[in-house]
Image (tube, rainbow, N blue to C red):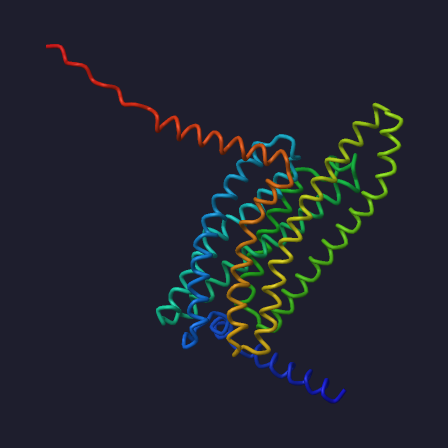
Amino acid sequence: MPFLCQTLGTLKKRESVALKKSFCELWQDYLPRDFASEDLYWTSITNCVFNSFLTHTAIMLNIVTMHAIRKTSSIPKTLKTLLLSLAVSDVDVGLLVQPYYISLLIKHLQLIAPTCNTYKLFYLFSQFFCSASFMGVVAVSVDRFLAIHLHLRYQELVTHKRVVAVVISIWLLSAFLSFLILSIPLDIYFVIIEIGGVVGLLITTMIYIKIYLAVRQHKSQIRQVLQVQQVAQVGEVATFSSLVKSAVSTFYVHIVFVLCYLLFFFSSVVREINSSSIVLKRFSCFAFTLVCLNSSLNPIIYCWKMRHIRHAVMNILRTMYWYKSGASHETPAVAGPTMP
Protein backbone atom coordinates (compact mmCIF):
# COMPACT_ATOMS: atom_id res chain seq x y z
CA MET A 1 0.00 0.00 0.00
CA PRO A 2 2.72 2.59 0.77
CA PHE A 3 4.36 1.81 -2.58
CA LEU A 4 1.01 2.19 -4.40
CA CYS A 5 0.31 5.53 -2.71
CA GLN A 6 3.79 6.74 -3.59
CA THR A 7 3.32 5.69 -7.24
CA LEU A 8 -0.04 7.45 -7.48
CA GLY A 9 1.46 10.55 -5.92
CA THR A 10 4.26 10.54 -8.49
CA LEU A 11 1.76 10.19 -11.36
CA LYS A 12 -0.31 13.09 -10.05
CA LYS A 13 2.78 15.29 -9.77
CA ARG A 14 3.84 14.44 -13.33
CA GLU A 15 0.31 15.03 -14.61
CA SER A 16 0.17 18.44 -12.92
CA VAL A 17 3.52 19.34 -14.47
CA ALA A 18 2.26 18.27 -17.91
CA LEU A 19 -0.89 20.37 -17.56
CA LYS A 20 1.21 23.40 -16.57
CA LYS A 21 3.05 23.16 -19.88
CA SER A 22 1.97 25.51 -22.62
CA PHE A 23 0.04 24.31 -25.63
CA CYS A 24 3.09 24.49 -27.89
CA GLU A 25 5.34 22.69 -25.39
CA LEU A 26 2.95 19.74 -25.33
CA TRP A 27 3.05 19.37 -29.11
CA GLN A 28 6.82 19.80 -29.17
CA ASP A 29 7.06 16.86 -26.79
CA TYR A 30 4.70 14.86 -28.97
CA LEU A 31 6.65 15.08 -32.25
CA PRO A 32 10.07 13.37 -32.39
CA ARG A 33 12.76 16.05 -32.27
CA ASP A 34 15.80 14.30 -30.83
CA PHE A 35 17.35 12.57 -33.83
CA ALA A 36 20.45 11.56 -31.91
CA SER A 37 18.57 8.26 -31.80
CA GLU A 38 18.49 6.58 -35.19
CA ASP A 39 15.14 4.98 -34.29
CA LEU A 40 13.39 8.37 -34.14
CA TYR A 41 14.95 9.41 -37.44
CA TRP A 42 13.65 6.35 -39.28
CA THR A 43 10.33 6.56 -37.42
CA SER A 44 9.73 10.01 -38.88
CA ILE A 45 10.72 8.91 -42.38
CA THR A 46 8.49 5.82 -42.17
CA ASN A 47 5.52 7.91 -41.00
CA CYS A 48 6.12 10.40 -43.82
CA VAL A 49 5.95 7.54 -46.34
CA PHE A 50 2.86 5.97 -44.75
CA ASN A 51 0.98 9.26 -44.54
CA SER A 52 1.91 10.18 -48.12
CA PHE A 53 0.26 6.94 -49.26
CA LEU A 54 -2.72 7.27 -46.89
CA THR A 55 -3.33 10.84 -48.04
CA HIS A 56 -4.11 9.61 -51.55
CA THR A 57 -6.19 6.64 -50.38
CA ALA A 58 -8.24 8.75 -47.96
CA ILE A 59 -9.05 11.30 -50.67
CA MET A 60 -9.71 8.94 -53.59
CA LEU A 61 -11.56 6.18 -51.71
CA ASN A 62 -13.85 8.61 -49.89
CA ILE A 63 -14.63 10.64 -53.02
CA VAL A 64 -15.60 7.46 -54.89
CA THR A 65 -17.61 6.27 -51.88
CA MET A 66 -19.42 9.62 -51.61
CA HIS A 67 -20.40 9.38 -55.27
CA ALA A 68 -21.55 5.79 -54.74
CA ILE A 69 -23.64 6.73 -51.68
CA ARG A 70 -25.34 9.50 -53.65
CA LYS A 71 -26.18 7.10 -56.49
CA THR A 72 -27.46 4.29 -54.24
CA SER A 73 -31.23 4.68 -54.09
CA SER A 74 -31.80 1.84 -51.61
CA ILE A 75 -30.12 3.75 -48.74
CA PRO A 76 -32.53 5.99 -46.79
CA LYS A 77 -32.00 9.71 -47.32
CA THR A 78 -31.34 10.24 -43.62
CA LEU A 79 -28.59 7.61 -43.49
CA LYS A 80 -27.14 8.98 -46.74
CA THR A 81 -26.78 12.42 -45.17
CA LEU A 82 -24.99 11.05 -42.10
CA LEU A 83 -22.65 8.83 -44.14
CA LEU A 84 -21.82 11.70 -46.51
CA SER A 85 -20.97 13.95 -43.55
CA LEU A 86 -18.68 11.26 -42.16
CA ALA A 87 -17.04 10.78 -45.56
CA VAL A 88 -16.48 14.56 -45.91
CA SER A 89 -14.59 14.62 -42.60
CA ASP A 90 -12.46 11.69 -43.81
CA VAL A 91 -11.67 13.47 -47.09
CA ASP A 92 -10.63 16.58 -45.17
CA VAL A 93 -8.27 14.49 -43.05
CA GLY A 94 -6.55 13.40 -46.26
CA LEU A 95 -6.58 16.90 -47.75
CA LEU A 96 -5.44 18.93 -44.75
CA VAL A 97 -4.45 17.00 -41.62
CA GLN A 98 -2.12 14.41 -43.13
CA PRO A 99 -0.20 16.80 -45.45
CA TYR A 100 0.20 19.16 -42.49
CA TYR A 101 1.50 16.32 -40.35
CA ILE A 102 3.97 15.32 -43.08
CA SER A 103 5.23 18.91 -43.31
CA LEU A 104 5.84 19.00 -39.54
CA LEU A 105 7.78 15.73 -39.66
CA ILE A 106 9.86 17.02 -42.58
CA LYS A 107 10.67 20.23 -40.69
CA HIS A 108 11.84 18.20 -37.71
CA LEU A 109 13.93 16.01 -39.99
CA GLN A 110 15.54 19.18 -41.31
CA LEU A 111 16.07 20.36 -37.70
CA ILE A 112 13.77 23.35 -38.31
CA ALA A 113 11.65 24.28 -35.29
CA PRO A 114 8.06 25.14 -36.30
CA THR A 115 6.52 28.23 -34.74
CA CYS A 116 3.86 28.06 -32.05
CA ASN A 117 1.19 29.25 -34.51
CA THR A 118 2.10 26.32 -36.78
CA TYR A 119 1.38 23.87 -33.97
CA LYS A 120 -1.87 25.66 -33.12
CA LEU A 121 -3.12 25.53 -36.69
CA PHE A 122 -2.25 21.84 -36.94
CA TYR A 123 -4.15 21.11 -33.73
CA LEU A 124 -7.19 23.12 -34.88
CA PHE A 125 -7.39 21.14 -38.11
CA SER A 126 -6.87 17.81 -36.34
CA GLN A 127 -9.34 18.47 -33.53
CA PHE A 128 -11.97 19.89 -35.88
CA PHE A 129 -12.11 16.96 -38.31
CA CYS A 130 -11.53 14.26 -35.67
CA SER A 131 -14.37 15.66 -33.55
CA ALA A 132 -16.62 15.74 -36.62
CA SER A 133 -15.73 12.10 -37.37
CA PHE A 134 -16.32 11.01 -33.77
CA MET A 135 -19.70 12.72 -33.49
CA GLY A 136 -20.58 11.50 -36.98
CA VAL A 137 -19.99 7.89 -35.90
CA VAL A 138 -22.15 8.46 -32.82
CA ALA A 139 -24.91 10.03 -34.94
CA VAL A 140 -24.92 7.08 -37.37
CA SER A 141 -25.17 4.67 -34.42
CA VAL A 142 -28.12 6.59 -32.95
CA ASP A 143 -29.82 6.68 -36.35
CA ARG A 144 -29.56 2.90 -36.81
CA PHE A 145 -30.84 2.33 -33.28
CA LEU A 146 -33.88 4.57 -33.90
CA ALA A 147 -34.54 2.79 -37.21
CA ILE A 148 -34.70 -0.58 -35.43
CA HIS A 149 -36.39 0.64 -32.25
CA LEU A 150 -39.04 2.86 -33.88
CA HIS A 151 -39.34 0.72 -37.02
CA LEU A 152 -42.61 1.89 -38.65
CA ARG A 153 -42.52 5.31 -36.91
CA TYR A 154 -38.92 5.97 -37.97
CA GLN A 155 -39.75 7.87 -41.17
CA GLU A 156 -42.32 9.96 -39.30
CA LEU A 157 -40.00 11.07 -36.49
CA VAL A 158 -36.54 11.03 -38.11
CA THR A 159 -37.01 13.36 -41.06
CA HIS A 160 -34.37 14.56 -43.50
CA LYS A 161 -34.61 18.15 -42.25
CA ARG A 162 -33.92 17.05 -38.68
CA VAL A 163 -30.93 14.96 -39.77
CA VAL A 164 -29.53 17.93 -41.72
CA ALA A 165 -29.93 20.05 -38.59
CA VAL A 166 -28.02 17.40 -36.61
CA VAL A 167 -25.19 17.35 -39.18
CA ILE A 168 -24.89 21.15 -39.12
CA SER A 169 -24.84 21.03 -35.31
CA ILE A 170 -22.05 18.42 -35.40
CA TRP A 171 -19.82 20.62 -37.56
CA LEU A 172 -20.55 23.76 -35.51
CA LEU A 173 -19.83 21.94 -32.25
CA SER A 174 -16.61 20.53 -33.71
CA ALA A 175 -15.48 24.05 -34.63
CA PHE A 176 -16.41 25.31 -31.15
CA LEU A 177 -14.40 22.55 -29.44
CA SER A 178 -11.41 23.24 -31.68
CA PHE A 179 -11.22 26.96 -30.92
CA LEU A 180 -12.13 26.48 -27.25
CA ILE A 181 -8.55 25.51 -26.42
CA LEU A 182 -7.41 29.04 -27.30
CA SER A 183 -9.56 30.62 -24.60
CA ILE A 184 -9.55 28.28 -21.56
CA PRO A 185 -6.80 26.57 -19.49
CA LEU A 186 -5.47 23.27 -20.80
CA ASP A 187 -6.52 21.23 -17.76
CA ILE A 188 -10.16 22.32 -18.10
CA TYR A 189 -10.09 21.75 -21.85
CA PHE A 190 -8.71 18.22 -21.54
CA VAL A 191 -11.37 17.38 -18.94
CA ILE A 192 -14.11 18.56 -21.33
CA ILE A 193 -12.69 16.53 -24.24
CA GLU A 194 -12.25 13.40 -22.11
CA ILE A 195 -15.77 13.63 -20.66
CA GLY A 196 -17.22 14.11 -24.16
CA GLY A 197 -15.26 11.13 -25.49
CA VAL A 198 -16.32 8.86 -22.62
CA VAL A 199 -19.98 9.90 -22.96
CA GLY A 200 -19.90 9.24 -26.72
CA LEU A 201 -18.34 5.80 -26.24
CA LEU A 202 -20.88 4.89 -23.54
CA ILE A 203 -23.77 6.00 -25.75
CA THR A 204 -22.62 3.97 -28.74
CA THR A 205 -21.84 0.93 -26.57
CA MET A 206 -25.32 0.97 -25.00
CA ILE A 207 -26.89 1.49 -28.43
CA TYR A 208 -25.25 -1.56 -29.97
CA ILE A 209 -26.07 -3.67 -26.90
CA LYS A 210 -29.74 -2.72 -27.33
CA ILE A 211 -29.55 -3.42 -31.06
CA TYR A 212 -28.13 -6.88 -30.30
CA LEU A 213 -30.93 -7.59 -27.82
CA ALA A 214 -33.55 -6.38 -30.30
CA VAL A 215 -32.15 -8.66 -32.99
CA ARG A 216 -32.25 -11.67 -30.67
CA GLN A 217 -35.83 -10.83 -29.69
CA HIS A 218 -36.97 -10.69 -33.31
CA LYS A 219 -35.20 -13.87 -34.41
CA SER A 220 -37.97 -16.08 -33.03
CA GLN A 221 -40.63 -13.89 -34.63
CA ILE A 222 -38.85 -14.06 -37.99
CA ARG A 223 -38.73 -17.87 -37.82
CA GLN A 224 -42.44 -18.05 -37.02
CA VAL A 225 -43.33 -15.74 -39.90
CA LEU A 226 -41.21 -17.70 -42.36
CA GLN A 227 -42.81 -20.95 -41.22
CA VAL A 228 -46.36 -19.60 -41.56
CA GLN A 229 -45.46 -17.65 -44.75
CA GLN A 230 -47.80 -14.77 -44.09
CA VAL A 231 -47.33 -12.46 -47.06
CA ALA A 232 -48.16 -9.30 -45.13
CA GLN A 233 -45.48 -10.01 -42.55
CA VAL A 234 -42.80 -11.38 -44.88
CA GLY A 235 -42.23 -7.88 -46.28
CA GLU A 236 -41.92 -6.48 -42.77
CA VAL A 237 -39.37 -9.16 -41.88
CA ALA A 238 -37.34 -8.31 -44.99
CA THR A 239 -37.36 -4.62 -44.03
CA PHE A 240 -36.22 -5.40 -40.52
CA SER A 241 -33.47 -7.67 -41.84
CA SER A 242 -32.12 -4.84 -44.01
CA LEU A 243 -32.12 -2.54 -40.97
CA VAL A 244 -30.14 -5.12 -39.02
CA LYS A 245 -27.58 -5.42 -41.82
CA SER A 246 -27.10 -1.64 -41.97
CA ALA A 247 -26.71 -1.54 -38.17
CA VAL A 248 -24.07 -4.27 -38.33
CA SER A 249 -22.22 -2.36 -41.06
CA THR A 250 -22.11 0.84 -38.99
CA PHE A 251 -21.03 -1.25 -35.99
CA TYR A 252 -17.85 -2.24 -37.88
CA VAL A 253 -17.20 1.45 -38.60
CA HIS A 254 -17.59 2.15 -34.88
CA ILE A 255 -15.25 -0.67 -33.83
CA VAL A 256 -12.48 0.40 -36.23
CA PHE A 257 -12.86 4.01 -35.10
CA VAL A 258 -12.59 3.07 -31.42
CA LEU A 259 -9.52 0.88 -31.98
CA CYS A 260 -7.67 3.58 -33.92
CA TYR A 261 -8.43 6.36 -31.45
CA LEU A 262 -7.99 4.35 -28.26
CA LEU A 263 -4.38 3.56 -29.13
CA PHE A 264 -3.71 7.26 -29.72
CA PHE A 265 -5.41 8.19 -26.43
CA PHE A 266 -3.44 5.49 -24.58
CA SER A 267 -0.15 6.69 -26.08
CA SER A 268 -0.94 10.29 -25.09
CA VAL A 269 -1.63 9.33 -21.47
CA VAL A 270 1.45 7.13 -21.14
CA ARG A 271 3.63 9.71 -22.87
CA GLU A 272 2.69 12.32 -20.26
CA ILE A 273 3.95 9.96 -17.56
CA ASN A 274 7.29 9.37 -19.25
CA SER A 275 7.79 11.86 -22.11
CA SER A 276 11.53 11.16 -22.37
CA SER A 277 11.10 7.54 -23.49
CA ILE A 278 12.16 7.03 -27.10
CA VAL A 279 9.92 3.96 -27.41
CA LEU A 280 6.87 5.99 -26.37
CA LYS A 281 7.72 8.75 -28.82
CA ARG A 282 7.91 6.20 -31.62
CA PHE A 283 4.61 4.65 -30.52
CA SER A 284 2.93 8.07 -30.33
CA CYS A 285 4.07 8.92 -33.85
CA PHE A 286 2.64 5.69 -35.27
CA ALA A 287 -0.52 6.10 -33.14
CA PHE A 288 -1.36 9.38 -34.89
CA THR A 289 -0.75 7.72 -38.27
CA LEU A 290 -3.21 5.02 -37.15
CA VAL A 291 -5.79 7.74 -36.47
CA CYS A 292 -5.29 8.99 -40.04
CA LEU A 293 -5.57 5.40 -41.31
CA ASN A 294 -9.13 5.35 -40.01
CA SER A 295 -10.14 7.79 -42.77
CA SER A 296 -8.99 5.28 -45.40
CA LEU A 297 -10.60 2.28 -43.68
CA ASN A 298 -14.15 3.67 -43.47
CA PRO A 299 -14.88 3.55 -47.24
CA ILE A 300 -13.42 0.04 -47.37
CA ILE A 301 -15.87 -1.02 -44.64
CA TYR A 302 -18.77 0.55 -46.56
CA CYS A 303 -17.86 -1.45 -49.68
CA TRP A 304 -17.26 -4.63 -47.68
CA LYS A 305 -20.43 -4.64 -45.57
CA MET A 306 -22.96 -2.62 -47.65
CA ARG A 307 -23.79 -4.53 -50.80
CA HIS A 308 -25.53 -1.67 -52.61
CA ILE A 309 -22.62 0.72 -52.05
CA ARG A 310 -20.19 -1.98 -53.18
CA HIS A 311 -22.11 -2.47 -56.44
CA ALA A 312 -22.28 1.29 -57.02
CA VAL A 313 -18.51 1.62 -56.47
CA MET A 314 -17.81 -1.23 -58.90
CA ASN A 315 -20.02 0.42 -61.53
CA ILE A 316 -18.18 3.72 -61.06
CA LEU A 317 -14.80 2.02 -61.43
CA ARG A 318 -15.96 0.13 -64.52
CA THR A 319 -17.20 3.36 -66.08
CA MET A 320 -13.88 5.08 -65.37
CA TYR A 321 -11.96 2.12 -66.85
CA TRP A 322 -14.10 1.98 -69.98
CA TYR A 323 -13.77 5.73 -70.45
CA LYS A 324 -9.98 5.60 -70.17
CA SER A 325 -9.62 2.53 -72.36
CA GLY A 326 -11.96 4.03 -74.96
CA ALA A 327 -10.02 7.29 -75.01
CA SER A 328 -6.69 5.45 -75.37
CA HIS A 329 -7.95 3.41 -78.34
CA GLU A 330 -9.23 6.43 -80.25
CA THR A 331 -7.19 7.00 -83.39
CA PRO A 332 -6.75 10.48 -84.79
CA ALA A 333 -8.44 11.12 -88.10
CA VAL A 334 -6.08 11.11 -91.08
CA ALA A 335 -6.36 14.29 -93.07
CA GLY A 336 -6.76 13.75 -96.83
CA PRO A 337 -5.18 15.81 -99.55
CA THR A 338 -6.61 19.28 -99.84
CA MET A 339 -8.43 20.18 -103.00
CA PRO A 340 -7.23 23.24 -104.88
